[in-house]
Image (tube, rainbow, N blue to C red; front, side, top):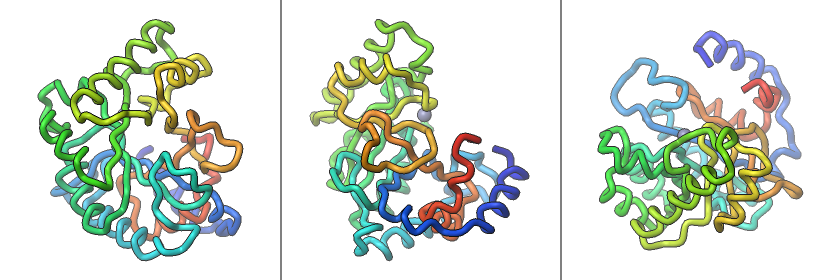
Length: 249
Ligand SMILES: [Zn+2]
């Protein structure tokens, strides 16, 4: 989404009514990386560090309320808010974990195993991944082995992607890995079947929506968080004012 479309979406969302019933559903937030230094546009999926800190303040302020408590992805709770990060960026450890950990807010990090072993400094190194996994608030999940569109692969290839990343992560962090986020949000019935077979219990998609009674745990919708999202935008997204955008993104 470019900035012009974003500004238009902001206008439309501001004019929407809050949806009171929306509070009773679980809202799963999807973050990617955090843009620490630049004042400029870090792209749709890189949120400004100051905006991220403001988001965490908002989430922490309302955590005592039943509808806004912060729960991990694998929690049985029907309400509340779940925080997730995709891809395994280095700033998930150096920025996000520091801010969320200080407030004792749980969050899940979906890691692409090949990103970790690639040596690309944008992503966590193996030792940083281990460090992140030891933080009590953190759950590590899989984001596939090579960040490929799973729905476009053969069943055998999907199986390899999901098993390889799970085994590598479990061996590296010495913990069970039962959560997954489909890379590029790409999945279909066969991918879900193989995910279940491989031992995943919860999987996050990139479809816009809430996690409610009847949602299949291997097809959990999320709410996209974008680069320019301020505290106010998050507040709007949490109360359903951006729901109209589902299906358009
Ligand atoms: Zn990704």
